[in-house]
Image (cartoon, rainbow, N blue to C red):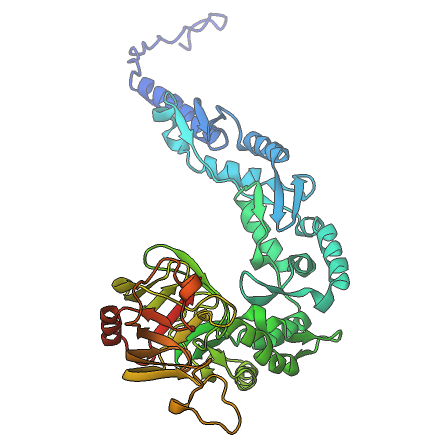
Length: 492
């Protein structure tokens, strides 16, 4: 090469031929997988902040919406809520704005979103999804309580106008209570708001303000308690061991006095006066008219008269009642009596179910035992001339004898004596086989063998001297059926 001319071109090196490249088919699935992964992760990220297509929450369509949109929708619907506080004597309607009521839309949307699985979106995107969530709400307690200002204000005015700070006797409960009008001034703020929180939280539209929302102030409560110390000391009265009546709270309340300063006292003298007065008027039956239904269905009123019935010792009974009430505890008091009856039924039948019934109008006598007619007969009663009339009323058998001589001395002239002790001019004497006296021995049932007729109207022109006459056999039967103390009811 050293001998070659210097201007000669250099020769090109011989080219080296490269081998052909093989295609990279393996990269295709990698690329596809990468794209799919990107799409999957991108979708997961998106559906972490958006609802899937075809999704509803409690029926509201939220497809592809962000939770914030649902939250805004829920919060905006708060204005639709309204309600009414309802209490005894008042109704207070309110709107959402009145109490600054608001649904918690954010919490609602977050709860709904939490039910969606964004990682499973490829499997769920084509389906439908019904989600649920629980609404919660808030309200301004101060504004809610302010709605009651009018009710409380009126209640306070009412309390000032009412006697005894609104403490009244309630006949339904037989007990002293605070009047409803006064209770309106005693609404308990905490109790009302507790009720409001529970009810508004449940989206109730009617909120009942009941007894549990009131608190009686200490001074009023003291008056109620002091009055009920006496009013709750009910006294059950018996007479001779027989149940009579109850001196209930209503009766006792008439003797309770509440002073302007709230002091509660018992009018003891009024109770002592009531015993021989009102109590005796109520329980005494001796000599009083009584109405009863005879076993044959006839309703009969017996004219006042006769010694049978109750007669109480009112003054002694009143002292016992007073002592019982002052104890503050319910008690049973047996009222002392002068005379007793079988049962207590003021104005009705207080005699037993064994009695003789004499109907002067019918001129007929009957005897009943436990509702069954065991004896009856026609009779002749006293001649209705104002002197010899048979007395009417309720009596009892006081004498029960046989072989008796009855007589009326008549007019005995001074210094003169008459055979058999009576004046034959205006006195009389009569022998009877059976004598059943009912009027202190002055009058009674007896046989009258000299009579030829019983019943009818013979008594109006040929009546007895006041006794109840009958034939021999009925008199004998009656004598065997009766005993001392049996009741005798005589009526017109």
